[in-house]
Image (cartoon, rainbow, N blue to C red; front, side, top):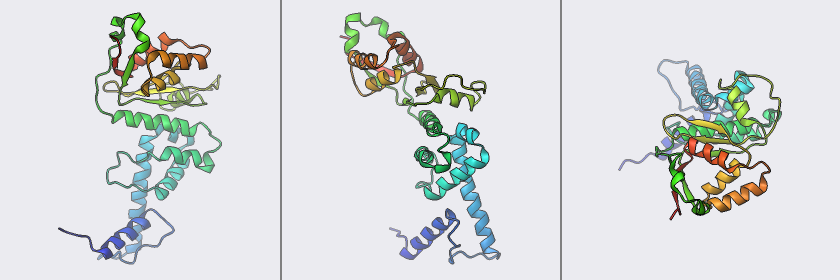
Length: 259
C-alpha cells in the first residue's frame, strides 16, 4: 500500500494554504525550470481564486446582480480564502456562502441578501436532487372527505421551503429575468417553495400559511393537525389554494392513511 510521506503532506498543505491566502509568501518548495517562480505562482493563485469566485457567481446569479460584479467578487473572494473547498468536486461548494453573507459586515445594509441566497442555494439543491415521480394533482380526488384529515405524505426530495421577512421571491424574480425590474410597492414577507418535479426547477410564492402547513406535512404531521396549526396562525388561510399549489409544484410523492 502506498503511503504519502509526512514531508510531502506538509509541502502540499503549505502550497494549498498559500494559494488561498494572499498574505502568505510563496512556499520555498515551489520551483520552476523556466524561472520567474514567484510571478507564475501569483498567476496560478489568481486563477484558482478566480475560478472559485466564478463558481459562486454561477450558483448565486441574483446575488451578483443585486450587489454588482465588483462587490460580489470581493465578497466571494473573502469567502474563498476563509472557506476553501474540501473536495475536488465543486458540486457542493458554496453551501456555506449563505451563512457567510448573513455575517458579512459590508452587506448589512441589504438585510434581505442572505434570504435571496438561501433561495438560490435551494434551487441548486433541487437541480441535483433525485428523480422521483410526483403525486398527480388528481390523486386526492378519490380519498373520502372524512379521511382527508388523517392523511400523511411523502415529500419530493427536491423540496425546500424558504421563509423570509422580505419579498424574497419578488426580489429574486426581478434579478434573474423572470419579472420586470422596478420598485417594490408592498415590502412584505414572502415564502418560497422550491421544487424540481421533473426536468426544470420551479420557484413559487406561497400563499399565507403555506410555508407553515407544508413544513408541518414535511415533518410527518397528519393533514388535519397541520391545517389546525397553520390556520390558527394565519388570518387569510386558504387550504384549497395551498394544496393546489403544492400538488402542481410536485411537493408530494405519495400519501398514506386513506383507508
